[in-house]
Image 1 (tube, rainbow, N blue to C red):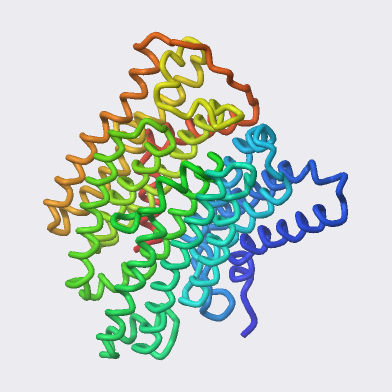
Image 2 (image 1 turned 30 degrees about the vertical axis):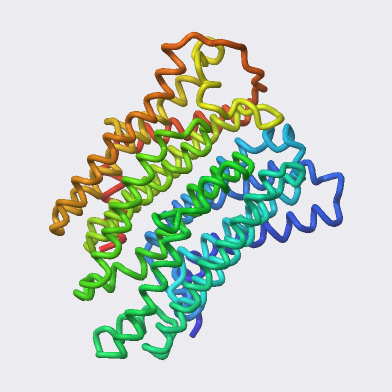
Length: 476
């Protein structure tokens, strides 16, 4: 069958990123004098792809037979991955020079990870999910340990690799069971098997294993054990990348697989399991974050709690819940990129300035940085009218509509607890005397990235309905 023009347009964003990777490799291997322009090239290829994804949303259609789709909601996710990647490039430009990290490899791996995320988001077949997941994960394993002179970075890479391989085993076994129950790896075949009375026992076991594997990828309790150590040991900009766009890609797969299953009424087994994962993730992440003195570990436990909030939307089993999760993912991506971006800006050469106490009195030395960090903390805490508030609001409302009032109440309780450790940082910056002057290296690139993320957090909070209407139009 000859592909239509819409099919070709829909598949172009990942092709553009793939072409960017090939060009970057050529520059690195054969044009050593041009390697210094790789950060700029990576930024512009991500920015162009993000813009192209938005203007070509159009109508969703299948490409490459039924393995992948493009357009519609997929293009919104493409935008999150590529624009998030562009922000990471900005906050990384001076940071990796300061850390003496190999820049060419860093940017090639970043683009390769983005391509893996795009494959995951556009997949309509479990084989493509696995290929995209592995491409993204392998890049993350290397990026976590790319600062080879740092023992913590090496440790984080090894831990992430070993536990990631273990989680991948669950996913592969899950896919094998689904194949055994449906005779195909297609999402469509999964739905047909459920409707047509396929081997539901094998399908159910496969989906449960699949959920366990992806619970690791989204950092949900009790599959979170890698998160604090990896986020702390990895370069801060890599932690920002993994905790935002990587989490978004994993949640995109869960939504694509589970929403149709739930819509058919096959949710009696899965909803209680996902609800418990959500409740435990929210409470554990929020409570343990209070005790953290390292700001990267604090944000790591915060990430676990936010995974719990997003799982509420999936547990609701209704389109409104998935819409809320996607809005939450967009908002969380830019909130957390901003928070980690500030940490990378303040961080010293030898992993200094990473304690929460180091931020005492920061408003006197760096008032703009303190103001931006306060904005991101308010947003992550869910204080209106910022984007974080509406992200929680939409998933809580979906839970109430689907009869999960108890889960929404636990979410509200967890949010109240989390306010303490988020606002503690604000109090330290503005209401305590600074015992010492921090050595902070200014970066115009990082500042540009931080300002862009701050504006997006505000815009998403001021105009949430517009974003929700757009997502709803494509998800129904």
